[in-house]
Length: 217
Image 1 (spheres, rainbow, N blue to C red):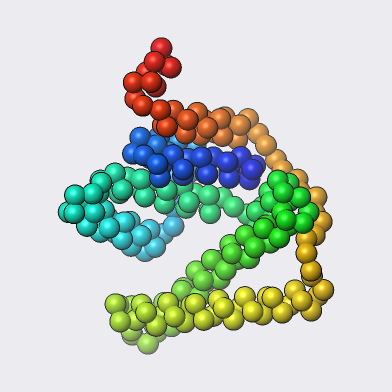
Image 2 (spheres, rainbow, N blue to C red):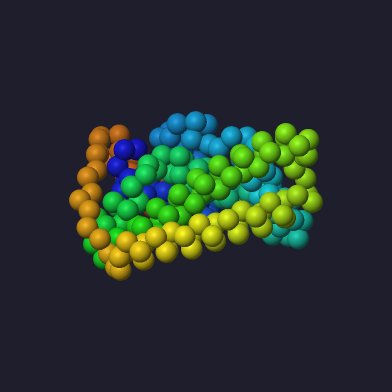
């Protein structure tokens, strides 16, 4: 989807539907299969499989205790796939443009700037992880349970330092509140079809199955 506004709308609606019920999760997965590049938008297996494994373990524990384990698994996997697609499709500056378009040059600019900094932070973290893997591989050290905690602590400390440096840089440049940009968006017929389908599936998933068949008739 080229229009980030419609992409954000579809992501929010389908994520809420998937989180709310198993029916919504199935609808979100069907939409994901139809309107996204599917596996091309997913992270590499080394990142995706551990996330799915964590969700599966949590679902297993929930099911063992009498909770909705299978439902939780389906819902969280659907949310994960949607989030991965939205992150992969987002380009630099789009969150700032959408926030300014929706909320104006003051509050919108502030929220958009925070969102852009957050996305940049995720990209930097991914680069740091890749560099750590290379460094550990050169030293012949395997990443295990003992190394996860110090690696995570190192990443957190590095992000805090970068955030502090960014804040100081904004202060030095005289930034106070808000800003002005002229957001431009591209929208094609596929974007409109995909967003309308997301809205329809999201609404239908909130209704009981009997009511859905009544509407379809």
